[in-house]
Length: 509
Image (tube, rainbow, N blue to C red):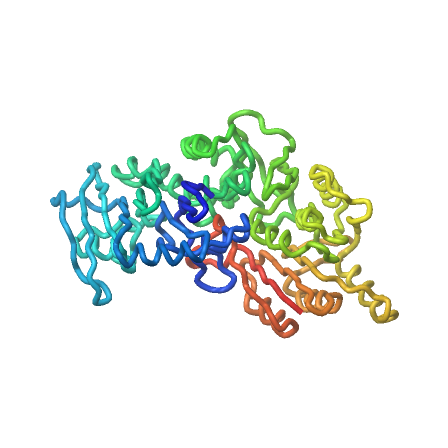
């Protein structure tokens, strides 16, 4: 979160493109919910910016301030200046007074400057109507770049930015500078400009909670890649096995230099992802650029630290698509008995212990992952001898043992309050014993339900992107009276024609 201003009444942030002011449905995160989840800040909406619009957004911190904001809008006492990119026009200054929803409104337009392809415009409004600038721009025959809803050219984001707000009671103007790529975009959206526009949706907004995020999501860019930032380093994953890491690097050097400058990174690696990592090694090959990347290093998220590795032999060690889930567990685990199943490097266990969980069981078949988990707990100086239990066992067998205990001695069995179940899509447990998430899901759901106490909660997740999402959801609803689907974090958007990157469900018994 980039805070532009804060006092006892008002909080003003520089909102990124791609995040709504308020959630559209339960399980979604808007800026309001994001502020509460990550900064424990309950805020009141003063005005809204469209999901695709970036820039100055004012919130009230008290109910009294919210009432004051309502009066400010009704009396047209605030003034907002927006900037947008659109096709060039012969007009330099004009006013559009077309009513919207049968209500009067007025937008003052000025052309700021022209490039070879597009122009930068300024739009000034007082009390805005729904999509006022976008609709008035379209009515003026200059629909915004990226605004397909109103006839604008295709682009990865809506090129509309709230640059300045003059707000009664705050002496100076509230300003959010233009994204730096706006100027370059006037000469046409090059690959570098497109990449900057995508990365700027996430960084630096997420920098208040982490130094890791996905800058380019798979499917957003021309080449089939994903680019993640881990601390001072970039990690590029290529999904086209016909291209070597070295070939990808040759084609991406300019882009990587741009992203490194934008996010203050020192270098990084490129990996070519294997479609079937269980028959071959996880990544086909690796290429590096910039300063040598350490074999492993520590990153931070939400005040906690995790060791990661960008080498070609293993997963990085921290799944960025579960950032929101980890924050939810942090808020739910205090005083609870927690089971972290398929614990991997135990990031959920770290969050639970940091939140003050009574006890946390980390269950995984891979000893190396549990050892990394123990290291993560040590890095954060968390108690582990009594509060943290590490179990090297097939999760299915561990759950079966729990059910036998419950059946044999129901009066003495201690239920769990919180369970995290984030299984892999496919895994080998050795000796021909394979795990398929779709096949195992009903049993996992049943067994987790059984070990939970009344009122207990469970977080289920899987990244079976081509799997039957409705089956996963319906299986849970047959057991749990409350099941909420959660969207992926801001930097893992739902791509057109693709299923969600990860399926996340919050269940209560």
